[in-house]
Image (cartoon, rainbow, N blue to C red; front, side):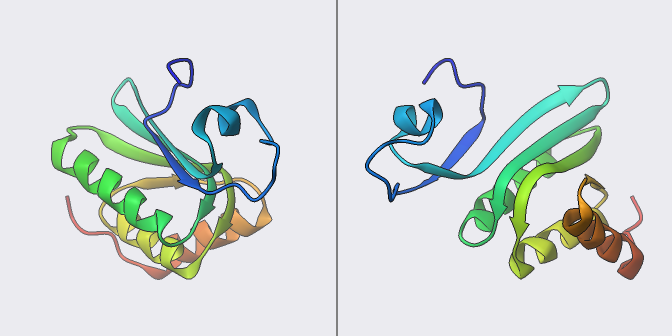
Length: 126
């Protein structure tokens, strides 16, 4: 598992007899949400891949709170690898945005969700 550059892998039991990928084979399950954190200049980038739904939303919330408590730079949430956002995931993203996180999305659905979040709320003063 040392050659997988990740901060967190969130797993659910695999339903197939054969793993679909090397990562699944190494982890023994299907990856539902992959959270990767990296720092680029003055920005902390949280890259999400997979499905943003319960109970995985709670892990993202915990990860984000840890970063928010310790960071001195801006936070960017990269949603380009997200394939599904449940209502609880959208609520968490809205809270993150109100607390100062920037949201980056591509694709029709994710872009529409991000636009809805950024149009509907008022950010807290920093």
